[in-house]
Image (tube, rainbow, N blue to C red):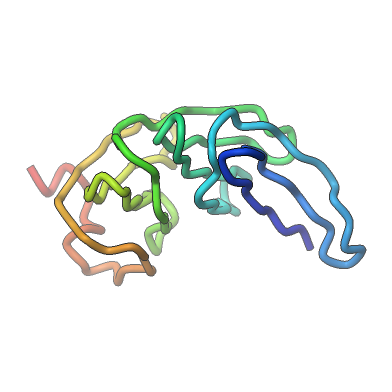
Length: 140
C-alpha cells in the first residue's frame, strides 16, 4: 500500500510513502502549498488542492507524476475535496467561500465548473441523487 501526503507553504511537495516499510518512495515539488489530496483509482491519477500561491487543483498521472491538468477557479486556498460516487466529478471547497464542481474524469477530460456560495470546511461523499451530483447539462 502507498500513502500520499501533502506539504505546507514551505514544503509544497506531494510525498509517497510505503505503508509496509514506513519509508518515502518518491516526492514531487508542486510549487504551491498542498492542502488536500484525492486518489482516482480508475484513472490512476491524483488530484491535489492548493493554497498559497496558486489556489487551484492539479491532476497528476501516478506513478510518473506527470501533470495532466490545472483546474483554475478558486481565488483562495482549496480547503478540501471529494469525488462523486461514480468517480467522474470532484467537488472542491475553498477559503474563497465557493464550492466548485469539476467534471474531470471523462474520456475527453473536459473540465467544467459550477460554483455556489458556502461556508463549509469539509466535504463528504454526496448521495448520487443529490442535486450537486447531477450531470452539469441537467443543471442549465
